[in-house]
Length: 96
Image (cartoon, rainbow, N blue to C red; front, top):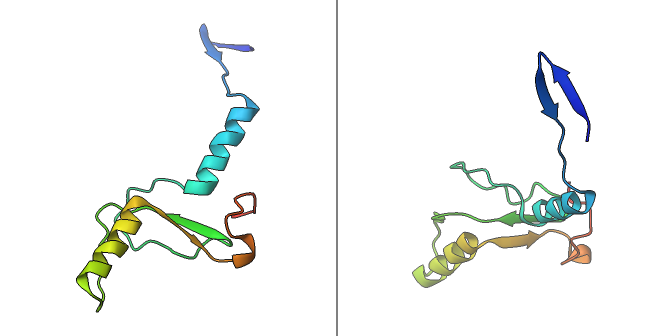
């Protein structure tokens, strides 16, 4: 641990272990990042998959109401949309 002294103040550098940083990175690769923004979700901006989770999804369509509720429930629970069938369920793929 190194210490830096500036104007009689002590600043210490901290970081997490590499293995934990890799776990965190894999989590965000799988589930994405929280945006907390009212918007239309981008369903196809990643090469292999997009994870979409909404709160109070608002979908409009000319389909039976029961099916519309099912779609809303799926998005509110979180859904992974796979774009490439050859990489289906393979989270080791580059998705950036």
